[in-house]
Length: 115
View 1 (tube, rainbow, N blue to C red):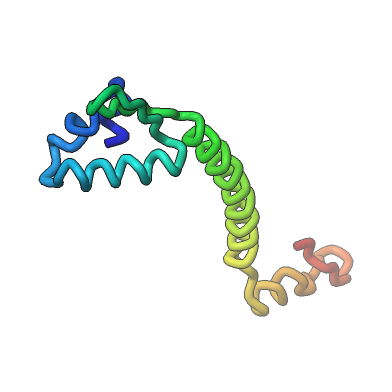
View 2: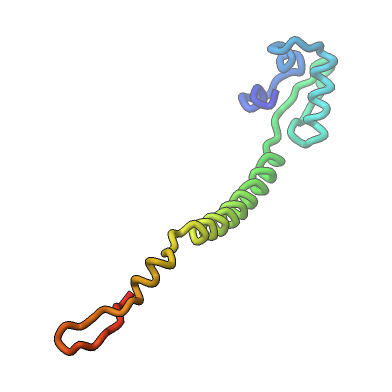
């Protein structure tokens, strides 16, 4: 129904016609949308004309944008932490080989290899 109202004002009967619901059920649904602040209804005789009010949707959209940014920041922290935790580490044998003493040919002294 909200999608239909996005195209312009409609009567309750027009809103109900695409669905297999009674006019009374459609009217109850419109009342729920009215209480949510999404629909404004005007009555002219027996005709109930409904119009979409998008202001509450904008408030909801702002709320979603705030939490989207918040979750993106939090997930970025988690992702960075995960990358640090899964970074390849050198084995003990590799560490020992990196710090092993290598002979120097000319003087007979031993010197440490740089890592």
